[in-house]
Length: 141
Image (cartoon, rainbow, N blue to C red):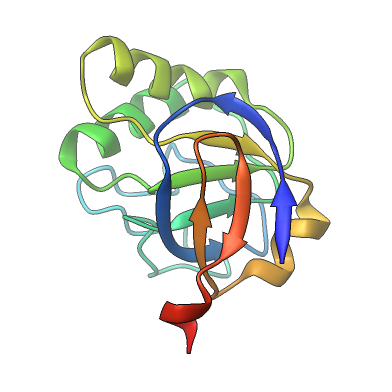
């Protein structure tokens, strides 16, 4: 399996288990910036941690504070290893750009349609710096 994505915010190659959310999320009030735990009481994946995952977002629920929450997650070391987004969310991505300007290690963000995200749930993925996604078959065996 190999998928090609559109790079929204470039970054180094990363690997991790894909947490493919089944519903859109608001980072403001939906994710604890200190722990990376999904805290939105109405979200299907409430209680799971996004820290270190390849976080697949089928959508986001807008808030102008989402960028600040993502910035706090990066600073706390609780950010996803990478973001896969169905559609770019400029406010959310701003958090990554500010983190980069601060000199903090910043996860890449890639555009991948939601229908291509769903089958990745639970798989250990390798994301190359040029936007290619492959399954880490060795780690999955």
